Image (tube, rainbow, N blue to C red; front, side):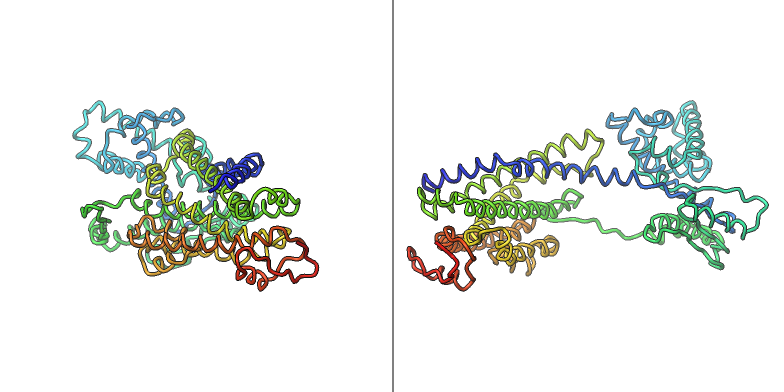
Amino acid sequence: MNKKTVLIAAREFNENLRTKTFWLGIFVFPVILLLSFIVPSWLDDQKDIRHFAVLDQSGWLAKDVESRSAFPDIERIFKEVAERQKAGKADPEWPPILKGLAPSLAEMDEKTRNKYAQSIVQFESIKDAIPEVLAQIPEAKRLEFDQRMKELRAWWGKLSAGEARNELGSFSLAKQNYELVNFETEGISVEEHRKILEEKLKAGAIFAYFEINGDPVTGSGSFVYNSRNVTDSSLKNWFERHANAAVRARRFQANNIDQSLVEKIQAPLVFAKKTIDKDGKQEDVDQQKTAHSFIPAAFVYLLWITIFMMAQMLLTNTIEEKSNRTIEVLLSSVAPFELMAGKIAGIAATGLTMIISWIIFFFLIVKFALPAMDMKAPFDITPLLTDPTFLGSFVVYFILGYLLYAALIAGIGSVCNSLKEAQNLMMPVSVFLMLPLFAMMPVVQSPNGGLAKILSYIPPLTPFIMMNRAAGPPTTFEYVVTTILLLASIVITFYGAAKIFRIGILMTGKPPKIGEILRWLRAPVGAMPDVESEDRQS
């Protein structure tokens, strides 16, 4: 790269740094990223509480569902409280009853905690539920914990959905979303009860109501879900899941089948996921290793966005400088190829600056911003995002992919006088740029499959597909061959773009046709083909 090309690149870089678009690109992407973590959680909290009623002629199913549905909530609360207590991060906003239970819950194993949770929601005696555990606890401490559990049971029974959202907002409980509403039905018939519920539903006092008209155990009768909202089936699914569990338990009991025996028979066969590491040793596949295979897809999205943005910036700058005649001034001092190469290099530096800023922002968000908002990932993702293989591949494929597409864009921009004209010529390039997104998931799921290997050898797709395969990873032979093909394609594209740029950058008026551009490519270096269009001047 000669001195004049470097000067053009520096000028282009400095000009871009002075634009509002550059700084918007720097800051808007991290803001959108942060909002992608916050907004879904916030919107979920803003969802209306689903108040519902039950017309229960069975006499027991509604109560059993209410009891069973509480178990997952209590289980989740106990687990979160215990983990945070162990980590020394007890929440000062917890209700007093949870603060009092926290030290004891932290000392228990998961199985014991779950038994305690089950004893609460099913209103059974703690002593009957876990006698072998209580036998090991001193009597004074056992009586104290027994009293706290009774207080918790009473508190939970009186807790409304609104209060659960205010007091237990960080636990993500079903109780925060669904609330059973009981209406006075003493002394009225079933038909009158149904009319009351229909009026409440019509008035919006309840979201839906369930009808249990028959015996759920035998399945005789009708079971109906009534709601004016036909798109949100979350309440129906939640109620059905717990109702089915309650009915199955009753059916086992009615047929004198030991439920514990059924659970043993139905216990699933679970295969532990293992993989072979680089040293040939077997190791467990946890969430972090699974994410390791999908992280390249995130890098591909970033690669695609960055190349597309930088290419559009190059196109816009080229057309703008051509239309305001700045190009003519520049060409009085530098050669066309030096100008084109300088513009491409300057915008490449702009893109790298933007990418580095995004990576820094992302690291700060994951490491500091999310923990400060009491939000956390299921595992530490920073090692994946800072993996030298991924980062190195990303930088290399950004530069190579950008150079390939930038050469195409520079050639297109040189023959156009407005963005409207450029859009027509850009359409084939834009369509081709969509292919890596369509192939993303198939390649992630089979990074060394036949489709992934074939697409890797198509130069315009190589940067995206090879980045997507980075978790595979591809063989050294594939890296070498695809890189050579990509470099050769870049050289050929630059050669052709330079010939088009040299002629088209000073032309005004009607843009040339495809056939005329092809003649420019065939013309000897230094020759100026005849311009056939009558209304175009050079």
